[in-house]
Length: 535
Image 1 (cartoon, helix red, strand yellow):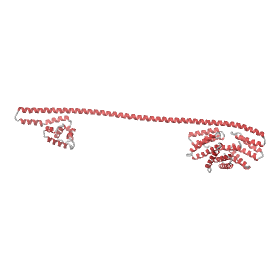
Image 2 (cartoon, rainbow, N blue to C red):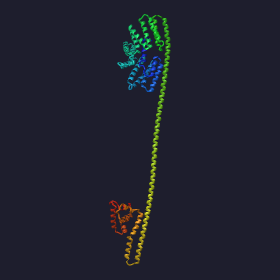
Image 3 (cartoon, one colour):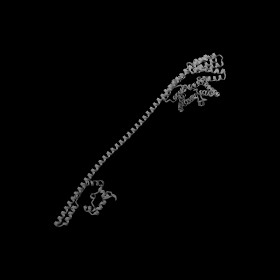
Image 4 (cartoon, helix red, strand yellow):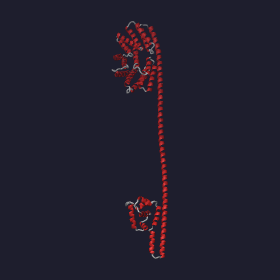
């Protein structure tokens, strides 16, 4: 691994770690602290816990941030996993556009720059450039406090340098340096100064290159960025190798770099210091020392790759744990969905049962009400039938009494007639003088007798209860003779029969009937006989 590749790795590392430090979420802060220490597995656990908490709290902003830092933490060991988290974070930031527009905007550019970095490591240079250019287009001229714009410039500088387009590369490096100096971003300035020192050294600009390297070292020491210190000391050591014949000075800087690199978990830095010493010893023709240093490099690489394998295993274990958690969460989610669906079905079934029982209850209640009404109607009908039966029996009794009364009246009349006939026979048989006068006297005796009428009225009233009373109450002006006419009409007698009984002529009967109609206030259409019969 040459110096340019190591430097490029450092820039990629910084562009992943330094996009935006968490500020409010405790779990993200703890994950960030572990990530700075190269404890990626611990950092991943904190970021994942923040992601789960955001899901539980339904906090989209923390969810988007957690997914972003999971991408930052993952892409070093798995580009695909890092890309997956970055894409998910990008989608989540998009959902925040309506409620947290500014946070969504900043989050989008962070995600695009992270994806650009991943594309660069996947050698998808065109896609990486396209995304970084989009970030620059959106953030250029704005007050970007996250450092994303400077990182986008730096990424493009690296991408053009890889493609050996040095003019474009230098232009974007200058823009990145200007952005970092403008923001006084000491996290990124050392890498920019080292890059400019490297370019100046290649051009043979002795003082300028050393000045950049010293600036980088000063800022790295100020920010306690040990990785940047290692690269700055190596750069100064190589500068002395190129421009100072006193190799002891160069070796002292490289030794300092090695002392700082040894405790670092990333053994790439220690290997780089030893490889720089090997270059120096080759210049001194100290091949024994070169051989010893090469042996050390081999041992460190073996241990480093063994460590890397362990880290990969740990990473896989963490990813497996995460996968298992995801699987369990999916199972729990499915169980919850099944439980929710079951509850919905039970509630629906319960509702249907309640509806059916309600309908059945009201139906039975209606039938019961109808049955009660039918029973009441039947009872009323029975009472009505009993009343009709009673009335019929009463009518039948009245008819019997009427007939009996008529029979009695007829019997009396027959008796009276027979008595009259007997008396007439006696008078005729005796042949007494003045027989004619006796006969007339006898006839007058039996034809005009008030007692006979009283008897008649007695029998008549027995058959027709209160007939006279009803007529007198309704028609106070009606006379006794009128009542006799009414009684004879009630017996449904003819005019001739009425004339014979009253011992008057039929015309007189008609006249009496006419006067009676007026007193009863009958119209010409009303029948006198029907009226009297209805009384």
